[in-house]
Image (tube, rainbow, N blue to C red; front, side, top):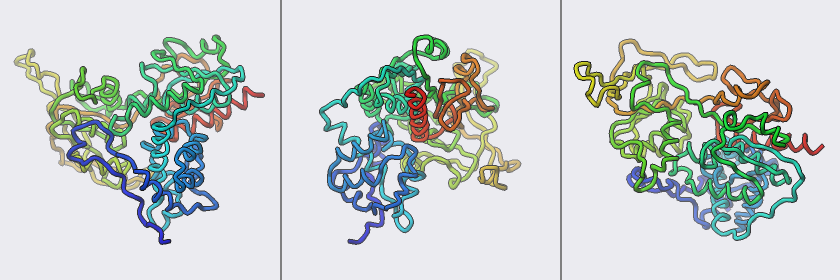
Length: 468
């Protein structure tokens, strides 16, 4: 039988429709498409796709089950390695991980591994009636700081081994960046809630509204009887450019903007606490978070949304799929531009003018690409005399985040690097005995699946340490 050269297209909402709603953009494969896509898998003996997965899902075996139409069996295989399959099937950059290693991808398009994983997880969530069996308890207690992907993964792996695990979350909703950082149209909140419910059924307790370092310290957790602590608190401290005007009203960090939108539920049809209406919005940056912020602003009613990025489209770090969706929805990409000042209204004659202190425009300078930098990307260089103004009402800065220093400042002997990331060894162990860390709290902002991989590594190390 001839090999189908291209992966099956993912059905999506039409751009002109989805640009005005928060419903999920990707609609998912049908069962028929799933079987046909699974048949593209060559079932290689050396299984390079598994090597490309940070949590080492047994990809060929789960795809083999899907070829047979055994979707629940496929889910069981995936869940042996992943605590968040419905999440990973939606937001992981498979194109640079498992799919990039796919042998079929050498000549043709790789198998749509992420799309198959999403279907298997959704099928289970829609059809499974029984809760997972509660593992036999082993008498050990572990505390997890943060309910994002690394924390939930570590919690799930330990709970399956019989540990009594408590997850402490600073906000009022479990899920970390999965619920406050990723928009509803990419990852519905109900999907995350279902994954958390599955962990609850395994015996994982989640305590919200607990800020470790303020409500409780890590040392106090040990005093309460926890034998190990995993720090998965993410990287929630936004970076800014340090240009004039960043303190004006109407300037957000992408972190704040998305958190407000998600936790204030502005994605609902009639939100009680909308965060913006109309206007022209500029998002500074070119990563996935910048795409999320720009597309969210569009759905909140912005008249025009710009992505302002200092390099070209080839260097844009966001996933190709997200960039294509943004372009289809009408986002205006102003590439090879770099902001130098945010300009506000300033009516000195009448300080009561309601526009005083608000954003009026953003001044940018044209860039050209010079010699490669340390990462191999061509360095953007300003073009003298090329400054221009972009009239906007809102500016969203999306140039990365750093770990919050609260835990470091309240935990003696916890070593961090120059960027505030917690220093760990290959097992996720920090400079303090019994304290482990992983995910963005260590690396700075990275992918969901890499954070999950760090959570798995730490869970394995914690189990080895406590089961001696």
